[in-house]
Amino acid sequence: MVDDRMSNFCILEPLQTRDADDLAETMVAAFEPYKELLHTVTSDNGKEFAEHARMAEKLEVDYFFAHPYHSWERGANENMNGLIRQYLPKGTLFESLTRAEVKWIEWKLNNRSRKRLGYLTPLEYISRRVKQIYLAT
Image (cartoon, rainbow, N blue to C red):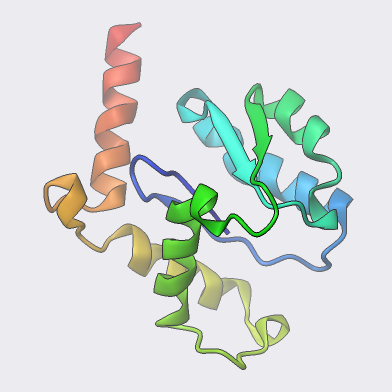
């Protein structure tokens, strides 16, 4: 799961493994269409992020790591984890989920209005940002 701190837009992709190569390939493929909107990525220090330099280079972003045990440095991500838990309570085996189920949760989260966005959904907010970027060029 990766989410945009400004818009709360999230992309959920199931991983086959927690391998760094698998994660890097999945993240690059998932974010390629949104490359113009990305500026930075912040993650924890898990070994699955060992290929962070490759991701940063391919997506042309700055990559940062949160300090260990400083979950507030990734506050938007922690909040999104809580929202995902509304659909997948603790004890859920993520390996048992189909890609369609994961994408359904992504759709629900991206189409849920947010007070901090003036009651727009993350999808509406990100769509407006895309229009602004492409109309400005």
